Image: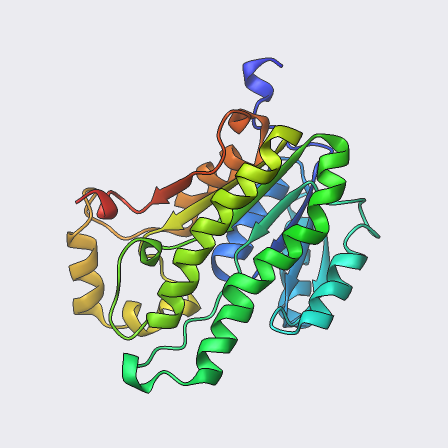
Length: 255
């Protein structure tokens, strides 16, 4: 393959969860711009339709699959419908996430369970259902959105951190199981990006500036900073990269 074609996703099909906003939507836009047909999955049908329209205005192809990822039956039905529009997905990006913040002693069982269902169970179950078709084609890419909290603890965020630590390990297990069949699994661990999930922090200007100061680059992330990592891990450019967690954090984790 000529080097210039390494990042070309023409003919590929990507399913992206959490695609109605934030990191998921941004990665979906990037994959579509590289030629992939993109299935957008999230709870809100209206927001998904708006994201689809944005991709189509830019010349891409997209379809929405509304789904509550915390509902296992709905998730299984979503996976069963995933091949109806463009064919079986060979790229899976698991970007949906929840962070129900509370001090450790105030974390409820319901909050713990809700976090694990979306942040960990959904990536596991979706990959279990989509990987066989990838294996049959000897071509697949799984990209899980991990976190700085995969490797360090943050206050009032125990369920989220636990789920993201487990997601990084799930990624390694998926890589060990499937890479020999052409299905590579990797994770992206974003640093500090302004999204709905981080609004409680980003809206505190002093705290947000303090986080930027702790990066090597001196600023927090913009969503476009994730495009290169996502395209690399989704494409043939990463044929010999698997089981890794790529930190896109301006150097925060290296400090």
